[in-house]
Image 1 (tube, one colour):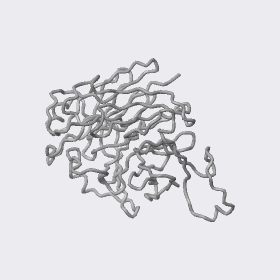
Image 2 (cartoon, helix red, strand yellow):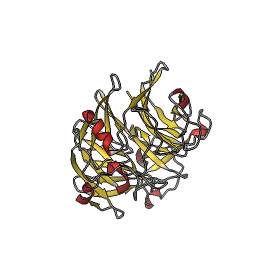
Image 3 (tube, helix red, strand yellow):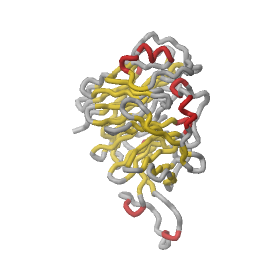
Image 4 (cartoon, one colour):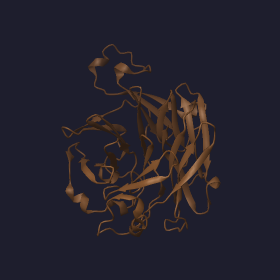
Length: 357
């Protein structure tokens, strides 16, 4: 039986100062095995005064005295997803939403001054790991929003902690330019024992940080095609990535790969290399075309789920897709903005992450 799937999504307006006139905004699409789906709406505190308006749900640090309203307002919506027990956790521009799976209502909004433009998040019962993307900084907070520790991966792979960044309220800073922020642009974060694995879009590889030794190293991938890695998911010992240009890339240790790669050189062991890879082009599956965007990934019962389409200045809709490695299409569903709200003045709507439950 197919799982229920929660899909986070983001949207934005051409006029960043556009007054939508609402206090809640669509941000989570829940698709059930029966085919029924529902879109859930949430409040999004953005400027300083909003945090005081929604104080009853806020856990963590209120705006610092130095905090100022945005000069350029960010998008609305939810980004990276995680789940622990009966709760979903969802990143946003400046906080993490704790959402009950029983009714998809917000129980709390967990926030501190080091939360900004979150992409992937990782959560267990003890802590929440987020990324200060534009500063290449990993932030570990408790479930009350208090910062436990933070550290930055520098361009020479050294790991350091700069206390000065705590003086700035990053929650009210917006990206002022197109393209990736940060040196590495960490998109997705996973924690395995004492290691934190970070998907670095700017180099299409993992950066792994050992939080006991505070050493970082790169896990490179033998790419066979152009790639723009975004999300990563460990499934049956192999890493599944989305590439935002419409590919699924599967990377593995060479000695344990489930796929066959073409190297037939007797002395391959004399060469240096790291992880090998296999490429799934979505146009070569039963989906049948190149999507204009691809983001968010999870694998359940050998089905790969991802979101497709929704790039800037295209059709105001995006899709949830389920495919097998064989190319068989298991699921395709679409969220059209006209079924959610007014299309007037909207520039984009796109899926970000997903979780099956």
